[in-house]
Length: 201
Image (cartoon, rainbow, N blue to C red; front, side, top):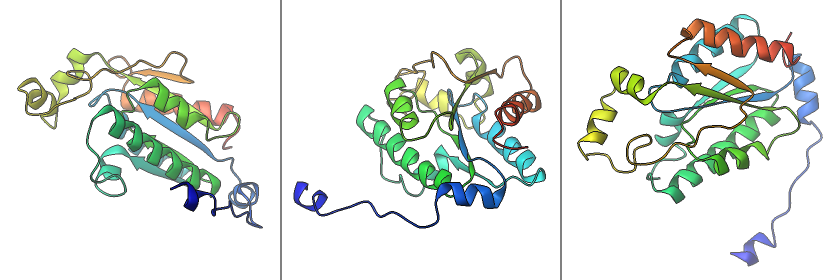
């Protein structure tokens, strides 16, 4: 393993992130949506992506479920596998940010250390952590996929919020309580932040 690593060197390119961002007339960033299953991450991600598209912003969604059907297929839900899931997701996100995009990531990412690891891959204020919050009782009521019911019955092991912990972000850039804010209100709060920070105009 070390022998292979010692023979790998980072390749630098003529066209940089700065060039690609200038071409798109925007500053790349990642909007990292974290929260319990059913809190509203994917719903907010899709609405935010639609609003950015209408504004002419080059954006892309990386959704946790979709990633687990592809690049992260085969990973389970142990602590180690969850960390690997987030590591891969963060590395992919970095590539999209390097391409000059506004990347919307919707993943539970339950552990603080993994979210902080992801943050270290990005420059300055590029990493925007959004805590999509909803009480466990509320997300269990929503439970459109029937996941919590299966977790409570023991069918799912290591299920976040039931048999595996969720570590609440201590200082997220944006806080959206979806039991109080509508999807549109939550999305507008994120969009306004991106505009105020001059990522888009």
